[in-house]
Image 1 (tube, rainbow, N blue to C red):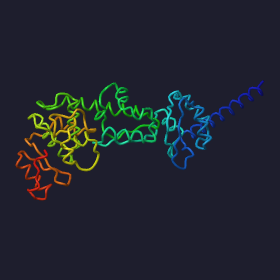
Image 2 (spheres, one colour):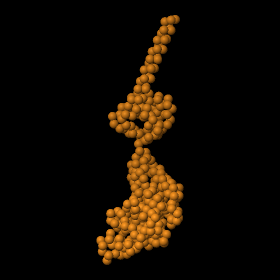
Image 3 (tube, rainbow, N blue to C red):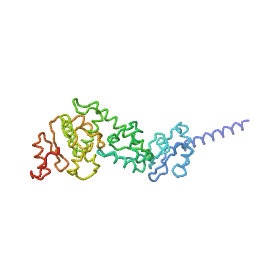
Image 4 (cartoon, one colour):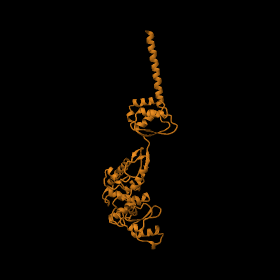
Length: 342
């Protein structure tokens, strides 16, 4: 009987030693870096189990003991939260931090920059050309886009906030557009709530239209408040805006200079032939232009003319403006002056 008890005790000691060794091996494995010599990108397919992911990583040669990793995931009760997507696996990553990466969903992010002043057409060309954005929209369905955004029948120009957006691979085009549209709506509403009193624009949409003109007319960021002041004052006084970018938008001119006949050709966007605002924005205005439009500089300037270096000369009287046009655009030759274009 004694020999039996000793045998059982011996086996128990062996089991404890083996368990301790196994535990040590497990803990060592969880905190040792994966077998990665360089950065790798791994995709967790939708619906993947911990076992499948562990097997894939083992077959790739990156995860030495997949059973340990699967055990850890199940013990931590995190296996159900592994998120699908692309992940960047960096050298030095441990099995423990790998699981944290997957459960946090820190996927590889791609980017698309929408510059301030782009038109809706330019933005859509960039969205459709991005290799990591999944195309679901009809290329000719601009109005479908607005319907999907809950603004059926509205013109899409101006309604998307310029910014750099980060997103995972296979983001849909409509998901990207929803995000940019939501940003614009939220920003515009917040800026409208903080607007100056007595402005000539009567709604957030009118502010968006005017901000798009300010965006296209502004060469230097510090001039936005002055440009906005010119147009706000002109609207208050019933003067025509006389802004070339609006004329170009209405005529479908994307580059080059306007001709005299372009200024005489009447369109809804010709602010030389028509008073008031154009019917829609002419571009995607950035946040700074929206803020400047709703909080313009406190000044009486009514005219501005390009100096040829991206900046403008601002004038409060027609006579001063005429002299500035002769100086900066006509080389000092007063005989070439055709009259004010502002």
